[in-house]
Amino acid sequence: MNLVQSLIGAALTPARPLHVGEAMTLWSILAALQDGRGVAMGLLHHTSDSELKRYIEQHIRDFDDPWTKRIKEFMLEHHISPPPPSSDKPAARESEIPPGAKFSDVEIAEMLVVMFRNGLQLVQHGLLECLNYAMGALLVQMQADGFRDSLMLREMMEKRGWLKAPPQWHPPGAAH
Image (cartoon, rainbow, N blue to C red; front, side):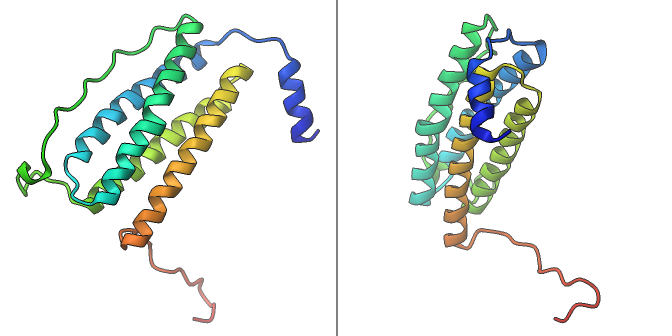
């Protein structure tokens, strides 16, 4: 069976009700989105790098906010109570944050990488347990959007010299 046949079969299959694992996955994803938005807003106040600032603002506008809305709507449509929303961080100027409390631009980028990694793993885990095709399609699209944003961050980090790479590995006996 190829991908097209699988997709056609999925589209023709009657909708299944969500099971408890799917409900918990959606609840966890929405909680992570809401909390992640708050963290990103806080990190936004720490950076002095204009490109990193634009990236964070764009990520909040084009990923966090629309996906929070879509996941919440899907949950409500399936009678799942959403987690309580996180509160927004108050505005602060980067210059007012004391040096000992201020994150560097490299640290901010690394924290965003960790947030992406954890979020994508949560979505991927949900996909592996998902039996509801509508939810599966939603999570596949979310994962694709997350990959896109994480690749944009990686490119920026590489351009800025912030990308940390482990040393090259040379297998025993291989020519160096």
